[in-house]
Amino acid sequence: MADTIAETVDLLYTIDQEQLTPDQQIALGSALAALAQAERLEQINERLRGIHQVLNAWAFKATVDGGR
Image (cartoon, rainbow, N blue to C red):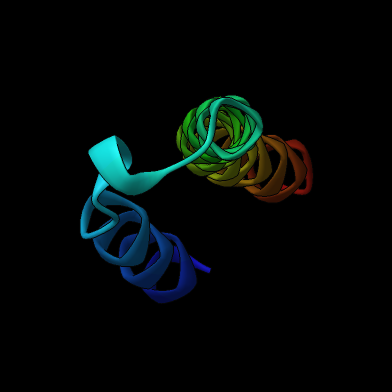
């Protein structure tokens, strides 16, 4: 997903905004806002994966220690 986001960012930033109609400028602004949200969601997802790994490690350790 990160590659797709990066490619989309590159594409959006190569657009000459001065050549756009007002409606196209609004659409571009909406696209950039959606892209920023997608990037933020990906960051949140990465943090959640890290938390999940820690919780799994704790659960595994509790299971191993409980079985002794």
